[in-house]
Image (tube, helix red, strand yellow):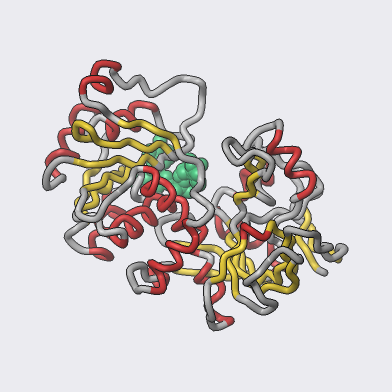
Length: 358
Ligand SMILES: NC(=O)c1ccc[n+]([C@@H]2O[C@H](COP(=O)([O-])OP(=O)(O)OC[C@H]3O[C@@H](n4cnc5c(N)ncnc54)[C@H](OP(=O)(O)O)[C@@H]3O)[C@@H](O)[C@H]2O)c1
């Protein structure tokens, strides 16, 4: 089969013929129809992000495809089924605290995550990929030409995981911190689909904030962030129709702790704050102990989403609560993989998606 191979960090991907994956028990082989090229893929392949990825490797975080072969322990999947392949692979020998690998992308840690990568090495930039059976979710019949659009599931699922972790309930008010980013903007769409009565969208880009209101209407309230903590917080409270029930942070590595704190401290007493962003460094976000304690605040981190969340996000799409057509797709064939990497980097932003079609 043909695949795009990363031979070394800092070198371009090479499209070549490689052996097709071999099926094992507990695994599925999928013919990959479409897979996302993330905006920061160039930083992963250059080595800048220091992702835990052993090279040479066929990269690629999950995608949409059709089942080619199933192992003997699958009872419902059939050859030809359209499926979403979730890159979040969990070790199977510890249900309480599994090691995590983003297949074809990065190990969750240098221990068990990297050991898992030795077996589930390759990702989706290939004509076929081998995935754990539990990582495959049927999406129902779709038109071949819609496979690129369905790749948006991978983007929508991240904020869904955060909002589910925040126990967002219909009728509540949620704040999405970093709402003008790729995952943040998807978070606005997901929160509305889940029944949020209001979504406070924060960001520095006022044009992008305005676009969210244009797309989704008056349930979206925008709060532009100018970098002064108290003033920014006051603007959030002004924008909110009432108490903020939960806050989901999706800021990138370049953001400062103060930007996370600005949003977190706006949550109501007994509210929930979920951290999903990429804030780096060993420093904390310095939330006041007394504020957390007296107000019974729930603060938690969230990496990706639960295994069965894919079924629920597919349900939101099938019910018409999320419109995949919000996403503007640019597709590239496998031979143009390096063009796709450059295009994704140059065209990041809300509801923009670069897709590879192996
Ligand atoms: N926990 C998980 O499972 C998980 C999964 C996937 C991704 N993530 C993380 O989610 C984060 C967001 O990813 P993304 O792809 O949505 O990023 P993105 O598209 O770059 O969006 C981030 C947004 O943050 C805003 N921002 C605020 N302060 C910024 C600063 N100092 N520098 C740059 N941007 C700033 C920008 O909007 P304005 O200019 O309008 O402020 C930007 O649009 C990443 O850190 C990623 O690692 C987490």
